[in-house]
Length: 624
Image (cartoon, rainbow, N blue to C red; front, side):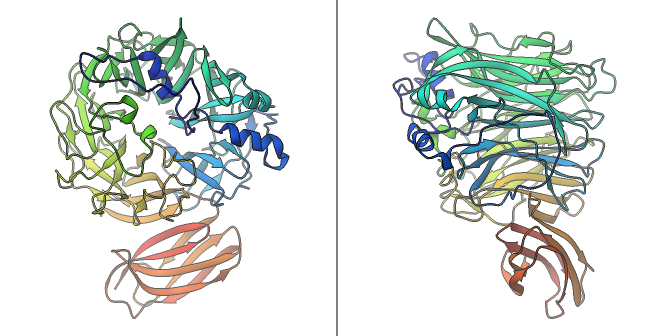
């Protein structure tokens, strides 16, 4: 979903009237207001201020080329740039290559786009591509959008898609018609350079705005796309790219929602076919599609919606002909998520997350060793499970091409009945079939407001999951998350990745406690289940090496900085307590190797942590 602030207008003051009883059916016209509640990025007051002060006007795109090279000039840790709602992918033919993109909001210039960070050395260092995907057209500004999504094909080509809501500054300020679409690009060098082909549009629609707020849908628009590539060796459609999304239109002042899936054949540079997954007459409301491809090349699309006008559920449809057509959707599970926007009581709330940003965020994935399909989501219960009175992470699987689904299970293993919140899961399947699921988890905070980032693994195709483990070393205080980006907060999407021997959770982190958000990644050895390195995803600082390790007395720490800054280095125990300060002074820009005597430490496991205004990075070590 978009990171866009709700603007008060006569068009948006109606509530989403969804009550789960026979007297109150979905008002589909009001449902459209929910979708657009966050779509407009700037308030009328902000727009007026920009028009009066040229120094605060947003940057206007001068898009002159569609192939852009990296120059690594942006400091991703500047405090006036806030990054949230990320996606990430790992190269299937080179696991050293990982790409990550958040939505970046620069409040100092009131601009937004989706920067791409990439590593070619398994996260030891990160570079920033200079590719700026928004605004799409020259002479315009982006009012909203984002939703970066990646997918690699079997040859190592990376695809990226995103959503942009854009128009001329005067139209945005005074009112008129603006464009909203899904766009895509590809990279053949691991995320360094990106190319937008001439036919780089998946879907382009238009909306009418007035007074900086939505006034109506002119032509069908799209929301929350997802992508997947056919990686099956035997499929005639190998390396086809599929994108699923919801379209929203207005016909005779009535809102229509529909899930669609488009296909880009492997040998084509544009999307050639669009297929209906759901029909408006059968589903008055749908959202949050996800897509995956199984070992046979079958394309599976899941989504959230209602087929009876009263209850909300998850549904599944499958295409066995390369996305040409899809089966009639069948139900996976009912979903209890009584949101204030639905006006369903008692409200299901998660403290620290804006009520307009509470979603089930379903995410599907296909097995790499059999034909199972998996799905995970956030909810406060189902037909079969009541949960722990807080939000939980749910999981279900199908072993018969999506015809039937297992009874949902709860993945988080914290104590039930305490109301602890666990939310916004992601899923990844390793080449050996192991399933990884990650999420935000508040079990360690009695006040139910601070969250670590957790993950769990299944080694038996989702029948059971092992003990939950924390990927983060420091909690994020959700009472401050969103304070710097108009309550958008972390967004709703994160991503867990995996290589042959590592689990790699990637999440949006607010450990600074001041509302500023950064992207972190953790590299966890699956053999030892130990965090081997954790760092902010940034080109500005890199922890290059720690040698020797294990340590008996002296060790050398090698790191690099992209600017001169006061830097603190210290030894922390596994509980996160500082046990030995090592350094606290200004360090110049460049590469440094410093020796530290750790002979006085007791035997055991510790972390060396490097911190400064560029962020934090850490490496574990063993003291002999």
